[in-house]
Figure 1 (cartoon, rainbow, N blue to C red):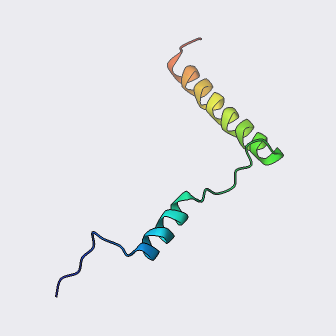
Figure 2 (figure 1 turned 135 degrees about the vertical axis):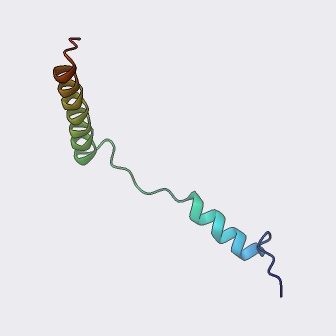
Length: 59
């Protein structure tokens, strides 16, 4: 018995399209988004400073 995995019926196709179109809510401009950006930037700068210290490279 073979299964056709290439085609979906119209209802299944509509559900698949609606699920892929939904994006999770973002809080990029809210306080949590700003806090997250701050810590990401801080971590990146910390690593850059550690690498510069170990390699003796001044910016």
